[in-house]
Length: 297
Image 1 (cartoon, helix red, strand yellow):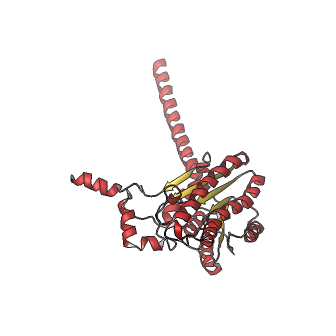
Image 2 (tube, one colour):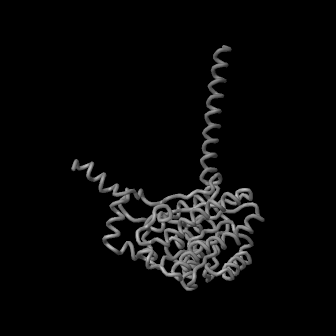
Image 3 (cartoon, rainbow, N blue to C red):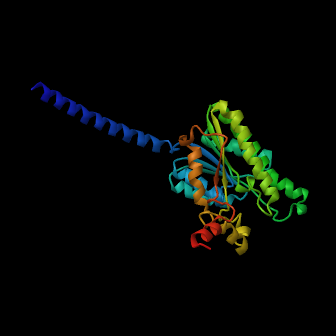
């Protein structure tokens, strides 16, 4: 009888162990999903009235964050704030031009007064007033472009970074561009500013990692927004872009949100100083080349 008892006990132990492991796997699966959550966090998003900034602000709110919103036009911000409020989250719209340091100080102060702290900063506000040769760029165009696209990112990150340093944690997400990696034709100054954003990301990540402040960037390709309408509404430019993109299409603002949520959450807890490129596989004439291969031409 002893062998039968032993066999029965072993079988029971195996079943119990399998049940335990299944439960443990389910627990781990749940915890992995939980790491993408940002419930109770406070985010500050610039350029939040439209396009990528609006999509990210709404996405972070849907994931559980309260959001401070800023751009120059308050009525547009208030519309986004209303959408966030309808999700059951708090929203604070603040009109500001982050080219100007006093307005940065006011923005940060009002956000802290309202929410007590800032967990997530998304630097998204940008401009590109010149489309053409660098021979045609004047001093004002240079100052406006670099002032918003790079100076604004730096000084707002500095102001919020000090708070995050004192808190011992924080996430900064800089919206760069594929033009910061490969210069965009006719977008020379914009490309320079976005290359600076990528280096800014690496510099801040290197210095602030010791304070548990992570800094990463997202570099989108051509996204269909009002900001880039001059490009995608041009049939020749749009066709060339789609033909040189593996997915064969432009991006929508909502397709940037997933990467932002990943970077804002604990799911990316060991990632800093990196740039995620979201360009749909924008390689040189790849679709035309693959089409040629597949048809045997």
